[in-house]
Length: 262
Image (cartoon, rainbow, N blue to C red):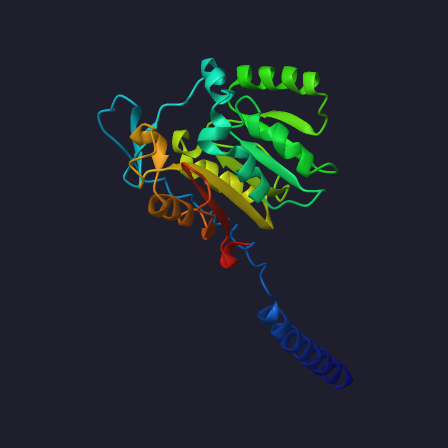
């Protein structure tokens, strides 16, 4: 009898143990699969709306916002940039006087050519510097030689590309373009590059021969209207803040970054 009771007791204990262990098997969690890798969204840059047509004698056949881009003035034209009549015809000294700069500012002369404006700007930024940027090495070679002759140490030649000024972000207080922008073969990309290089309160000073004035003796593709310039710069995040109408032949337009893009 005692033996039978002992067997019953052992069976009961085994049954209870089996019952108590069963829920643990049910609650055991399987390892979850690792989350799928998320591919980062890379913003795409919209292709500039360039159009192409048969080139006119002074153009390259590539158009931006309805404007045919003009041929680039090559380094053989340095003589025209340095001509004696330039002061009488364009009044560059008046233009330079109107460019507001602090002594420590960094300004880029985009399409500097022979450095005609660069060397005159150097006096306005004695503790700063002028970055004389051009895409033609011959222009920069001429500029370096001229800089040594004049003993001007704060003008620095810089080789740019046709679609990028190749300057660090937020490195410029101002940029000057004198009768050069209308020749840029990649204007949208160049303005995008300038937007990055300019500080939040940076500005662009744009001098272009006035296309609205038939008395300006310059070929049509080498002139621009204020309306056209405003349209192209707006597409790159710039706003026209003034046009100082004080030069004989040229617009003197000042652009700043849009508030939303600073």
